[in-house]
Length: 617
Image 1 (cartoon, rainbow, N blue to C red):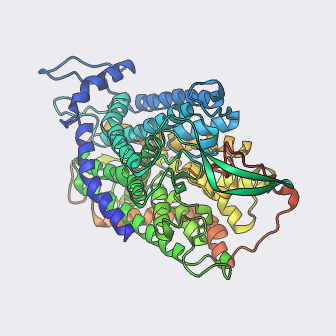
Image 2: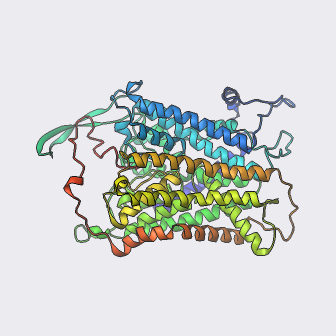
Image 3: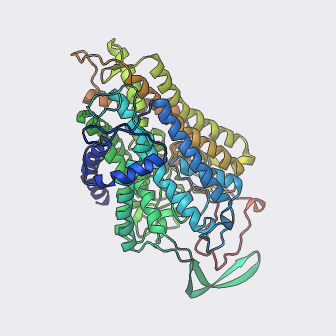
């Protein structure tokens, strides 16, 4: 029931939201037009130049070709990434650090900065114990506003390319002009992300999510606990609970497909997700804007049938994979056979949510590039944990904000090319011919995914000293594969038992993959859009290949599934499929390799799980 209710509310809210997004991105009047003067001030500060006023209307912002747009995107992200890195690395001596949090190691600061400028929010740290309030607000929350806005801006630049370029005030397309990056991110921030995040933060605060600047709270335990650490007994009578402006961060982590939580276990923690209503609100927020953007693209292009085709393909994949995840998690956990009552797999799940709501969240968070969790994916059944992997391999079911359609666009181009060859016609999209340059770019970007994911996984498994894998066998392979798959998909969820936080290899290799996998798949399609925008439009005839029909949708779906199956089926067979068929026998871990326990102190008992559990996002 909760699954159907979630999908129903998402589509009821996303449709009008998508039409609104299309209106303000076309420059049409909306109820937030009073923000125009403020937006222009910000844009001028960022160096945007405006033309002269025409007929009493404000002058147009100077446009950019695809190269200029890509340079602006790269430079702005590099700049904020550097600022974030410095904040993480020197937070101990900076303001807003009432709990005296220490500096991050350089490799962890590098990975975190790369993660948050790429809208991935892969967390090799526990926020409540390793980040100051300044780091959480400026280095985390602020980037969780900027980076999704950058992805959406790139999507609308691509759409303008498909339309022949940004239209001037007379409504005439300007070939090669994809709009202005700084104007786009400003509008998307002020008119979409900030208002929605403000509303959701208020709703979450109402439900009990902390929203304060005070330091951590100390609570007296109802019953004292005695723990034995390294042979010595210690009695614990208090618990220190970190708080802070949590509601604001949770709002933007969900709506911006960010996923980076305030606490290490993310939305499994009651302070991030205290009630059934907060769970529903956060679950809807994961896919609300990604779905709305698909509605927006059909309206923006003035091609609603094309938008319907894209949303149909995406929703079909999402529905099939979501219900497959739920069915897989309703099965009992074979590792606990005879040790627990029969029923669904509750290992790693909150009892207050249950198996269905956790499986639904896991599917939606990996159908987008959100990556937040309300349960541990590492504890899912073998097939239940494999389906989120498939979601991320596809990487365009709904995808991240903007980049979901950008990834889908590459497969649209490939499908148009294949279908054109099958019927003996020159491939074209919206009347613009797809030629050698466009196909080379699309092919290279598509091949980048298996090269990085499988290559880095192979290197990690081939050198045990850098793998740091305490789970051998099929599940151990799945953990490593999931890590690099999640980083490539800019997702950030994890099989957290891998333990990547203190590893220099995973932090540095991950940072490189995060940056490459974010920006090349954006710049490539931008280049294709720029090349298409300057081409002449061929008249549509009865022989024109239409890209908004059920036949094309079926062909697109077939091409996507076949290509990704060829790329990743062997890895999935060696991981999740083999684990399901063979099972995983308990393996004794040598005593010398077990990490030494540290005594939980009253200053950090709430963060009892290690800071380096891997990205729980």
